[in-house]
Image (cartoon, rainbow, N blue to C red; front, side, top):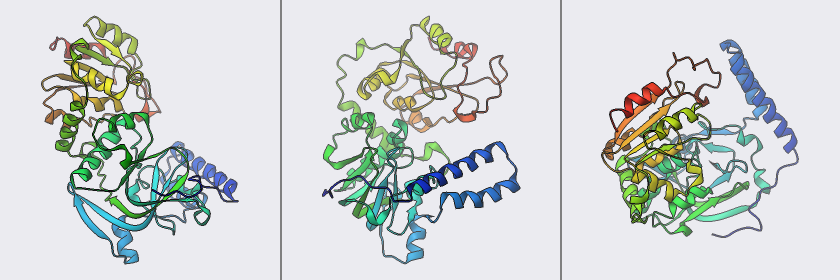
Amino acid sequence: MQKSESPRCSMSNNSLKRILAYIAGLSIRILKIFVPIKSLWNKLKVLQDICYGNSYNFISAQEYIDKFRVNIDTYFLDGIKVFVFSDFYVTVNETSAESYIHDKNKNILIESGASYVNRNFPTILINFPKTKLIDIDEAVDLAIMYNYNYWHFSFTALDKIMAFEENGYKGKYIVPNMKYIRELLALTNIPMEKFIFTDGTKCTFRVKKLHVLEYSYKGDSTSFSNPEIMHKIRDLVLSNIDLSDISTYPKRIFVKRIGIRKIKNDSEVENYLNSYGFKTIVPENYSVEEQIKYFYAADIVFCAHGANSTNALYMRPNTHFIESFGAKYVNPCMLDIIKVNKLNYNMIVENLYSKHSKKNVKGSIADYNVDLKHLDSVLYNLV
């Protein structure tokens, strides 16, 4: 990989104007939430597009080919169509380490997740003609969507990487520069020099041969990955972990969540679980390898739904995985893995009729209470 003088991209002279436009556009989005009048929405959409400066064209890879009549090689990887674009660009967002796949004329491929995740970033996108570029011969961009998240990287990126590797791919992988991603990749036997880690610096990669996975999100979180490939990943990762001391790990663990959608009465839950011999762990306090060992050793895991649920991938067959959800966000995205791994699974969903439940404007990101009676009815028959 050859670099120019610096990977950092300078902002244009009218950057302040763009930032103010971004703030104005964001204000309109907030207003739309609190004034849900459909007729007003349509008018606001026009104004929002003006504020956001939507001269950027969001387009699918196939639509791009049809519109501009370019010759693009294609092939299939694990049932997913892959487009091979020549001399295409990947621009990294300096604030989130996510990236956008685009040409030099402001056409952004929705395969980068731009239509699903965040259309605001392009308003302060690089001033392309003045950009310092990093040249890469061959790459696939996986610093997209929510792939900086442990679950998303495992189930929407790592399985694709393994499929590419099995297909004999020789290029680089552009991935988020997160500590847990580096730790996970270190357990896969893939040479680390094959990875380009985005570091949150706004920069652009010019890729001579860019492999682009067709955008195929259908709203079903269990359809992101191939469970058979994930099971292979499980076996590979475990083969690179020393399990000789696994008998020293607890057989029952409570995986405490500290981010959004956490359990509000977790002290009550923790005290209750302690009476059944559960050990509480906060995954952020452990390396990825240690987290995996805790899950692998456990006979019963109780976990608040979130990225920590990913580690159910590494549990042993016939063990028990209990997952809790708030009533506003029930997304059991491990079901295929639970089936392939032959796990016993229970869901505990917030009781809307309990004395603790109140209308919460936070909706899908709201914290929630776990009904101890419900939890007891599950554990009573397991322990």
